[in-house]
Length: 151
Image (cartoon, rainbow, N blue to C red; front, side, top):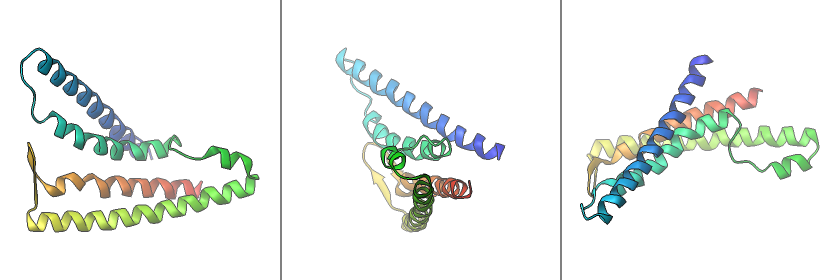
């Protein structure tokens, strides 16, 4: 269990570093543009990719710490038994949704890799790179929902 917690914390830390680097790069790009030094062409594109990547990286850690978005108003207004049933039902639904995301993202990655699809903007990258973290992070989310279900 210690390795699992360390892994989730490492992913969350990676998200923080990614967002920090993005903030620094965007600031640098704006300053360079305003002082007449030109622009860093790839910064906007990297920022576009960084936001969903950071979201994927931090989501399992937030669920692990029970700091995810939830509707506490409803839970506090229900009797304890109904709250427990609702939370367990949501965990089961969460596992099912994660399984769907894992299944389709793996298929998408394999298909994209097989045909050699590329995304060409300022940077040219294999299309499957954009989706590589989806099955990993949704698998971790499913594990976390299952862990919550057992609690």
